[in-house]
Image (cartoon, rainbow, N blue to C red; front, side):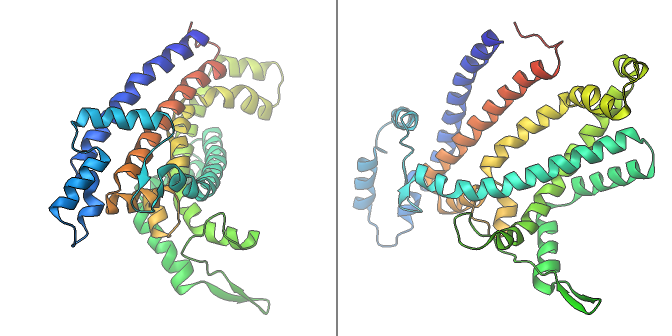
Length: 327
């Protein structure tokens, strides 16, 4: 296992360098290039542009600029955000808590409900429960995120839900805009701000989790070792959880690995619609403002997380399935 881990880590280094080169070249082709934010100033002159190019080293060959950026990036100097007038690392760390709060809650909700729904559908195939889970999953797969988010805003924020029961008035209206994790407010107020974006994100993820869990669990339920465990007199719940679920999680691990980078990268559409000040919304704003340093920092970090969590998924296979040998 150690040899495999070292080999995969060494393989990831040239991959990350190649990704950073491609991103650096693409962002350099933006209209205006790295100086695009300064070009928006109507009073800037050609002399000012040349002076900025010299000060930022943009008059050097592109490969020299890339090596200079790479050296600084590896030492923690990710550049200066022209949009926020702050270091890129500071701009990212400022938005990260809000993203972790939103994405973490939605991930836990979707995984918990998705696993339960998938297991129930696999245990009772072609039953009303299975048909309901399947229909709900197809609904989640086909639902456009932006449309569903706007419908939730209209239902719970614009119009609101008000009704009376047993002489008491109930108000289920919810705020449509988000709040950062550093803002004031009690726990209930923070939960109310999280409800709508969490429902939007969890619906899509829940559909994925339930379908993969159902298919994997159904395959495991018909294996010989499951029948052997039942012949030994073990309870059905013990067989299902101890012997079935662990082996059924093999393909689900891949989905988890691909989902975890999103916990740090944020949800671009959802955060924009609900005005949630996380990483996804930061990326959209940086793209609109053509903030070169911030875009490079965000994209390279996202690429690294994808590579890293895929490595963790491969290592998890060896723990979940003893038949998987890497050495």
